[in-house]
Image (tube, rainbow, N blue to C red; front, side, top):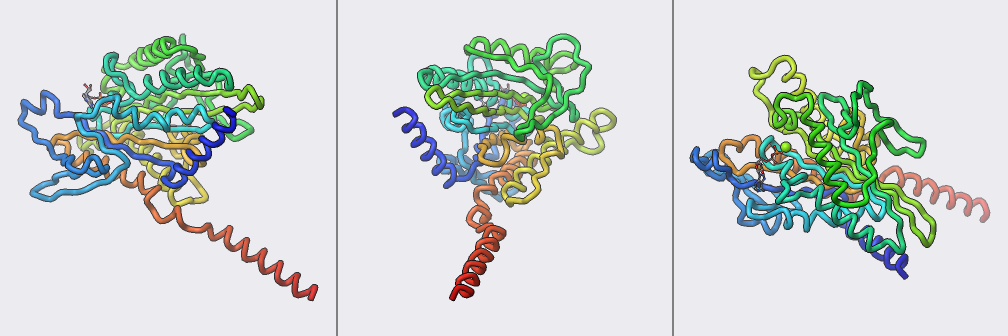
Length: 376
Ligand code: ADP
Ligand code: MG
């Protein structure tokens, strides 16, 4: 009975997904902060139609540019509101789906707040794991779940294992397994059974991130922090085993640096960030266009995420923005990037018939017809 219900649920879920596409974009705007308020900054974001997923940006003069996303969160919406919408996608990892949730935006717009949150105000990462444990317990008569986590940092196109202890001089590389999945050999996979273990693991990851950097805030804004949750599920009735991955990614700041300001190390960092964030945009656009070649290998970020971008995997992007007039050009650039990403489900490509498939069918029909004629 349980299996039947699961199959039914999965089917329904697939139908809903099919109708909506596999990519969601949620936009979240943080409140004006104290510094901005005392500096007399004004808000350029219009939330009048936020309930319908629309927001307006007041650009110079009286012009307003409108954007539409799957959800728009105003500065009043809290972590619970955000997780209420993100949770269904996150927990589909328990049903065998690969999922990728990431936060994109300018430094200081709330990427880390959304993903990690604070101890009092926990974000998507913690809430997701909490819910995964809860559901896996509820299903324990039918499924045996094994959950483990890895924490990576990608900085200057180099992967660092944040859970590795002791000196790690070895360069980490991405390898493809014979069944096609991607993994990083030698990386620590911490098995976790309870939420408190998870908290410890996450703390260890955060602490490791600080090691070797003079300014942790600056460093973390220039690297991608990637939490990978691996779920192995065994159906106790059928014996069927599945393996799936959920990536929770706090991306490097998307802001463009003024050319004149950057030299040396900073220039290299900036180029690597641009490269990986554009690569992410390119991969998603290529998926949208159903292109035969998806350029996953153009950056470590997209290469690592390969299993969880495309196919029947699910992607959720938070585009984080600042409300301040001082940030308006970065805000517009983030919203344009997000619009390009969301184009995947809005574009006409979904309804297009695969012409290759159509040609094949035509040929088969032609062949069948001619065979009939010969027989006549
Ligand atoms: P980022 O990771 O994008 O650089 P942070 O997550 O560090 O940005 O956010 C910058 C500051 O703004 C932090 O002090 C954070 O707590 C605060 N903040 C961000 N988003 C919100 C929000 N929605 N509500 C309240 N405070 C927020
Ligand atoms: Mg951050």
